[in-house]
Image (cartoon, rainbow, N blue to C red; front, side, top):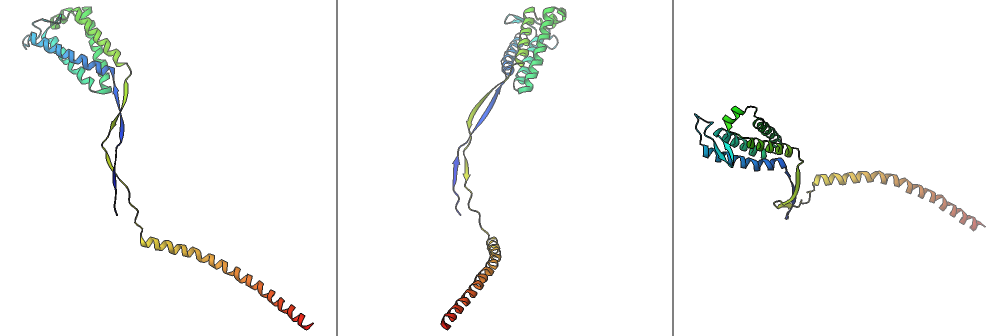
Length: 216
């Protein structure tokens, strides 16, 4: 029994979800990581004095401690950007932390310690407040979905062949048909006998009429 195969090309629609907070976190994460590495290169890293020296990077004072914090902040943002919905929640949390740090710097709550550890100025504090507010706002924005049709690999489709017929099953089917036809024959035979019985008296009556005519 021969089988013919043919190829059928199919397409599927792939839905891609874009989250504004994750995209923004990826961009800011790269910038924060680059600024932290640049500041760490300029200040150096001395484990005995991680709070000194102080160097300016893009007009903002940095210590090795602040540089390390910016590197860690950038890594967390990049990781959150790749985590989908859970990453959006983490981005919102990082935004709140950034706002809190900025408020501490701007309000001079711990001005002595904060300035000694990070050398952060009011400009640095306002920058962190702005970044945190943008993160919190972006986390509340709806997601955008886009569907795109992609061709899939052609798959051979084999046509099904005829189902083989079993001789035993066919013989049983014929026997069942014959068994159903036998009662019909038995019912039809008495009807034929009754019609022939009605025909006999009529033939007798014809003979009587012929005999009466001859006698006359």
